[in-house]
Length: 77
Image (tube, rainbow, N blue to C red; front, side, top):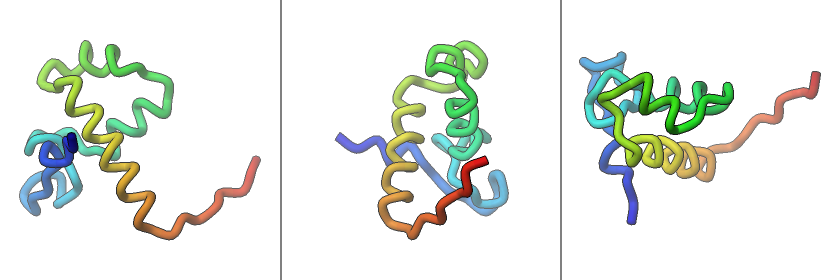
């Protein structure tokens, strides 16, 4: 079952960036925090408005977006 209905956009919220449930939590921020090493539990502890399904929705959104767009490889440091 898709959780993408939890991801919304509104020009009045975070400049129209995709956010979780109309809250001011951009998908981009959640993904960056997960990529930095935070766990889903850490996010839920730090952001009590979030629900576990919101994190899964952000990951699903990222999967859909990366499947639809051309990726640009980053040079290894």
